[in-house]
Amino acid sequence: MTKIAVFASGQGSNLQALIDASAKGELPARIELVVSDRRGCYALTRAEEAAIETLVLSPADYESRSQYEAIILEKLLELQIEYLVLAGFMRLIGPTLLAPYPERIINIHPSLLPLFPGKDAIGQALAAEVTETGVTIHYVDEGMDTGPIIAQERISVNPGEDRRSLEGRIHALEHHLYPKVLKQIFTGGNANGKTRTN
Ligand code: GAR
Picture 1 (spheres, rainbow, N blue to C red):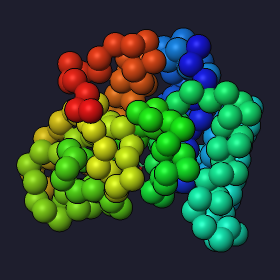
Picture 2 (spheres, rainbow, N blue to C red; picture 1 turned 90 degrees about the vertical axis):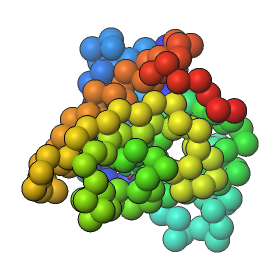
Picture 3 (cartoon, protein in one colour; picture 1 turned 120 degrees about the vertical axis):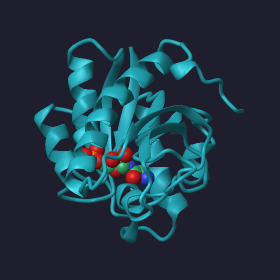
């Protein structure tokens, strides 16, 4: 069983999908820890309901990112965490965490990267009036949604589709794709037939 920590800042619907997949035996991983940068976010409630340990740190309380990340790293090492899984964690990861976890930090993003990185990718896609968008799962590097792509899945944007509808369909896709691709990674398979780019 791969030991993972899930990082989340918001609603935590992807965290919930991972908790459920793990409970059903569809994801060969144990979520040992949920890390959040936002006190009171709903992802933390989901973690507590699933009896998962939480670590909540407010970056504003630390002098630097490396100081903040060093506290997280200490906990990750104590729990022997093997992979960091970002699920709506809206903060860049720095060298303090990247160095000890090379190609072991994974993120999900609601667009076909490199299109629409950063915040509100779904709103960006709608504003650009694209006819298709999707979901990307990638290894994390120091950039904003820029690391090597592991898997992508596309969906059409329906004519006149509103944000609520598109967001719902993208989230449903994420909840299905993330456990599936993580399973392939943890069992040594090659997600979506793509090869790593480094
Ligand atoms: C998800 O759509 C995820 O892909 C996105 O935040 C949402 C979190 O939803 N992540 C990013 O935009 C990362 N750049 P959730 O809290 O319900 O899982």
